[in-house]
Length: 382
Picture 1 (cartoon, rainbow, N blue to C red):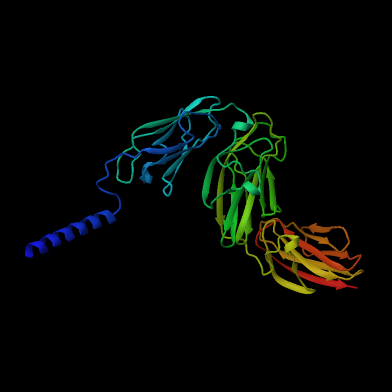
Picture 2 (cartoon, rainbow, N blue to C red):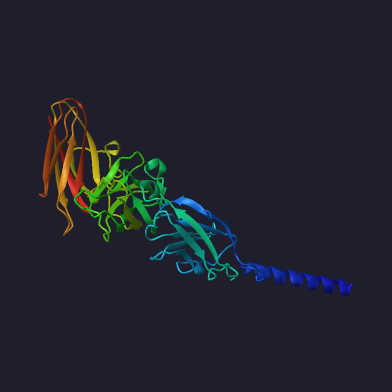
């Protein structure tokens, strides 16, 4: 009986030791080197993009610290590639920093310095692929197809996406989601652009909502070495950014850029938000309304009912932070009337419009500055 109890205790102790050992993470008995479970593009593939990323999925969990631009290589490249590793899928992505040579064989090399979670080095392995010719069909980047909202590529805040292309009649559309109000910036370091800079505007960054309506648009030049960027303050929700070159690119012309998506503290806003579009316009009564605020290029829309023959007068008084643009505008859409705009740098601005029939007037105020405090004094005169 005592012998039986001793054996049982020995077995329980051994089981506990094994359990403690296995709960610490990697199996110390793992001596097998990791292998490539799959690759995209597959080894030996042809007619690939000139900015083709290589995705390598390993057979087991890897030591992420050993996966970088010196352990995973793109053979024959002058510039080091960008390497990212996703632990959940065990997939490393290698993105070139410049275009590949056209119609040429290239190699992705996995070196012995790559190890699995147990420290086993990978066997050196080479994957080969051939690029296609230099034309627009072979300039698609890793985010394509993303030409419109329906095919938009999701992007995360605080992440950089490398070696993207803008080509003839191409629009790159990106989707992002916010859980709280934030200011979002899309920056696009330009690595290559056509030499001819007279075709204006050369580079466009636009923020949109899901129906394609623009919150704000930005056009500028695109020269290699520049970093065009555009920011806007958003409420929680899902939004889109559209980026493209309006050079009228032809033949083998292209723009090569990176995409940096960042967020920061938003511009202050008021109780009438969201009222960025006419269909979101906030009803507002006559009298003086203070404590209003607006952001850069933010369009604040309001509505008020009018009777035929009535005149609506809106007095806009604003305080713009020092150093910011003083430009501001009031835009009216009266019942059965044309649009009227009053704009300038003076404060206050007074705008008037008369209704030719009864209905609802829509008007908006807009500023070319951030953190603007303003008031509206609204009067209806028969």
